[in-house]
Image 1 (cartoon, one colour):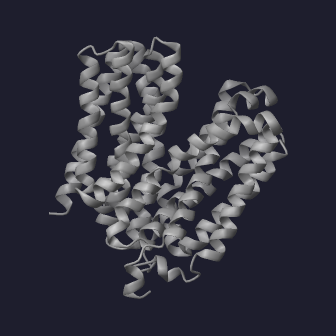
Image 2 (cartoon, rainbow, N blue to C red; image 1 turned 60 degrees about the vertical axis):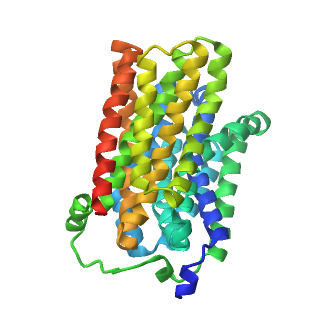
Length: 394
């Protein structure tokens, strides 16, 4: 690839890679939005039906780092298109509404599809971005999960009402298929375009795995990110229960995810033009801690409570944009980038797994003060790792 090409941002390809990420995140969102219908159709009970939503994430929890190594070896373009094709086939199978056992098997396999996309796509976006746009494009990428839930929430229920579960899953399969075909034609078939540095894979697997966890360039962005996933899912789940007004509660359930998505994109712009992404992460954790302090001081009338919580979620939303922007800034080649994204996938799923039950336990024991205390602890730890990431560039 020429130097001139490297200085240009391939906006069309980046836009399609972002949509590919959205289609992959919809693998979570489509079962979330159709939870009640799945419960009624399969009669599998709340526990197993809930597991059908979360089981996709367990693959990232177990294989996140491994996926980065595999993508580096096989090629990011091949992994991405293969993951999209696998997701297409699985959605088509689900559209026939087979037995619940088969549904669960497809959900586990969808975890591999989702992981392939979230490891390969951001690595390719970083390579297709000129240096002056890289933090912006990584901020855009960071919004894919929130956008997927917003779009699925907007269109999912009408699709189910018109065409039942079959229509929702078939539509998702078609979307992933269209993404795969479009990227086959638009992405450069030369895998070297998406690599920098050595592509040697002579090291033993477990030695490489250990090196990833010991390398600050790959580890620190993931550690900044894990405390975000601990917090945001829990805030979106439990905070509305503290809002006394039914109408305000319903409004905030729509507004809070949008504020989080806006924060992620804002983080990309801040990281590009005003400050290092590590500083953005420090600012985000400070803003989140300040919001918790406002709640501790008793700003809990319905309107002020909603404003404070909105501010907390906005600042929390800055964190993934900052963490994702850190990876191409700190990584020394595309292999480290892919490993960084794999580790973020793994630690992100860890945070999403341990966060909600931790918050639920403390809220049950101490009410709102339990939530505030855990938010402060999370902000302290997240700020510490963001500070270490700042030091890494000195």
